[in-house]
Length: 153
Ligand SMILES: NC(=O)c1ccc[n+]([C@@H]2O[C@H](COP(=O)([O-])OP(=O)(O)OC[C@H]3O[C@@H](n4cnc5c(N)ncnc54)[C@H](OP(=O)(O)O)[C@@H]3O)[C@@H](O)[C@H]2O)c1
Image (cartoon, rainbow, N blue to C red):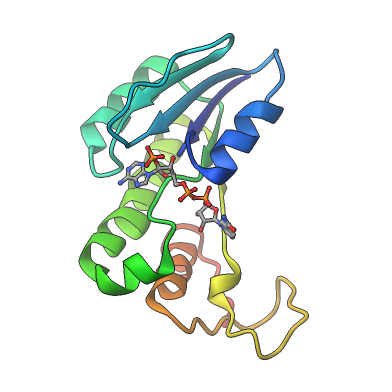
């Protein structure tokens, strides 16, 4: 199965690649200024989430059946101080990935965060009301609402 993992060098992306198994053809994206070697059934491509044309080309060529979207700015502290960049990457970047998935009929797995809750009303479930306490959580919630129509409200 052709699987695109955005953020293949991140904490979650790396673990998913390790668990991927031999029958899966994996394309993994990353951002940093380093070379990372392809191995076995895994190929890497350096691609910024703001590069919509680059992702368009990748979808056209690789034709992923599944996209696991883990890429983005993962530090709540950084996003709090760099709000415009946070929105561009974590919301707009996600929007482009979701649009390409719709266009190509790829299944999309999007990763949420405990950051959409304030931590005051645990335990939480899918019906719990979201109440982010920081901008990182607000961006996650905005992506939920914009892309998937899930409001948690
Ligand atoms: N880690 C947790 O405890 C946790 C908990 C709950 C939810 N999550 C969610 O799980 C997802 C993955 O988290 P993570 O901890 O694996 O994140 P992470 O370790 O910070 O990894 C982020 C990945 O995104 C890439 N990236 C960063 N900026 C990018 C950009 N502008 N364009 C393209 N790629 C970019 C990074 O590439 P480089 O390595 O090349 O920089 C890296 O591969 C996130 O949505 C996060 O909210 C994580």
